[in-house]
Image (cartoon, rainbow, N blue to C red):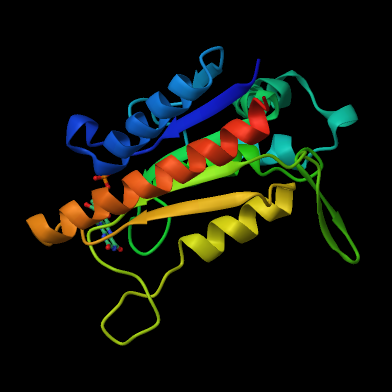
Length: 212
Ligand SMILES: Cc1cc2nc3c(=O)[nH]c(=O)nc-3n(C[C@H](O)[C@H](O)[C@H](O)COP(=O)(O)O)c2cc1C
């Protein structure tokens, strides 16, 4: 039985496009793999704290030298890393905020991407300590991203790809739902694109996670 970690990020509840698409994708995956276990970490509904002083001390103190306060400060981080380690696949459904990830997702990242826990730093670069697994990202944005003059510059996708490869996760596909605040036509086109993407991904993930 495989385990999926599902991470919705938007704070907009039922109004959220990324949540709507994420819930649709999750339902399709559960339909294709009925025994699948789902861990939900709702960052929009139940936001995480930002790193504070004791957390930073704790994460930078070698494990064997940590005191009780350090261990206490890392409990949430350990829980979140445990959820990620337990997952055979991960789905993040998130808005794009100010050209990159929303702060709710950045807090999760700061708890999970930890030196000497999920990556090591060496003279020749960082080495990821997590095993690779499929990560699928559904990203909703009001506008459009690209290289042409009228598009926004994208710090979302390159950032997430670089970040996750740092901890060892490179099997990444992203659905970009764009122009969601520009009227009915682009909105319908974004959901049409999402429908095709989800159908293809469900097939690929089912073949990987629950081979016949
Ligand atoms: C704080 C904030 C920042 C945003 N920044 C961007 C942005 O940089 N580019 C963009 O295209 N849309 C931006 N938007 C619009 C959202 O990406 C858009 O409303 C999207 O649908 C949000 O996802 P959701 O529907 O899942 O909540 C921003 C919205 C908010 C609230």
